[in-house]
Length: 196
Image (cartoon, rainbow, N blue to C red; front, top):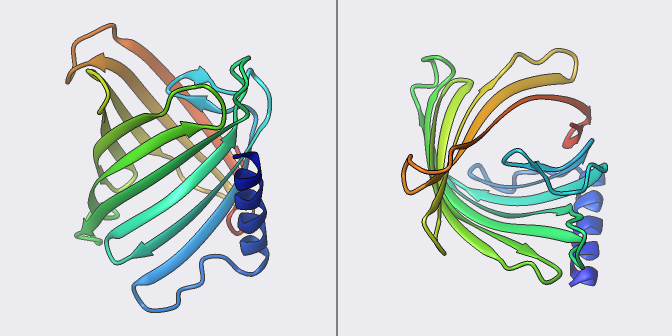
C-alpha cells in the first residue's frame, strides 16, 4: 500500500510539472494538486498529531461527473501513515450570473487507510449559492451524520480565506452535537500547489 501511495504522490507531482488540468476535450478534464497544511484537521479533530501534513489529489471530470482520489499523511499513534479517499460525484451549477452561481452536488466517498484503521463509506448532498455552501454527509456503516456550512472569503494575490461550521449528529440533526468552528487561510504557491 505504501508503494501505491508513494507512486500516487509521485504521479501527482509529475502531473503538476507537466501542466495538470489539461483538457483533452471540451467537457473532459484531468486535474491534480498538492497541498501542505500546518495540520490535517477533519471535522475539527487533528488527523496528524499536530504536525505538518502533505496531501495530494488527482481528479477526472466529464461534464457533471467527477471521480478522484485524495491522499494525506496521518498520525493516529497507530500503524497508519496515509489516508486515501476515493470519491465520485455528480454536480451542476445553474444561474451563473446570480450570486456567482447556484450549485448542487451529490456523491459517495470512501475513507481508507494503509494500516489497521477501518474504512468508512459516506454519501453526501451539498449545495451552494455563490461562496456560501452547505453539505450533509451520511455514514453508510451506521447512524452518524455530519453537517457543514462554509463561506469562502475573497482572494487576494494568492491568499484565500474561508470560515466553516460543522456539527456531528446522530441521524439528520439530533445527537451529541459535537460542533466545531474554523477559520482557514491558504496561499497558492503556484497553479495547483497550495499551503494551508
